[in-house]
Length: 280
Image (cartoon, rainbow, N blue to C red; front, side):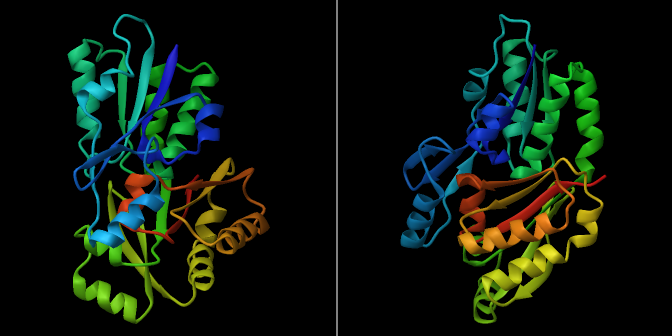
């Protein structure tokens, strides 16, 4: 049997995890001296409250080799396909490799560096689960996924630069002027890293819809199976406006909404929203 695993940064909902029978390996979030498991015993809202009270971004950490080993059975015959957040952002990829080596099952553990984050990973995880259900062999699935990775389109528009500044990813001056001028940057993931692409202004509903509409031509070239609306806590009317717009395009069989988990949310802050899909 082929088992599909992902670290918790894939930001898939519990319903999707159950539907596709995916095993999740949680990463760590540290609030001062307290340590929590992403998606298990900490919420983004708790993180925002702590971050605002302390004026800093929580620390996040990869799953330990011992943690990962608990998800792998050295005595069985199952093959594992394990997805991790971009190896340029975390040690999780390497830790999965070391766990498989320690258990002596490297031949049965296929590790995929997603070169992405959030549902940019989730899109690949679901695709792999679908391929496994079709009866494809693990090596074939890995080959298909590796050839698909570059077609994942993952981007987000940020409401506030405060959290990026606290995490050392934005200068204090940029954060100050961003707040003063109400600038909301679009951040895209490519080559395993995050890159600023464009700046928006205006109310949350306006700049989020401007961001989504700017992608219309790319959306028309997307694979039709699904598109994700992933956010870190946005007003309901903003999310529904995005859903309505995507629905009006008549392109997708599924429009899925997920909340970003604690690891991703701790860096981007509340009000962040992304539209993620796989290009043809």
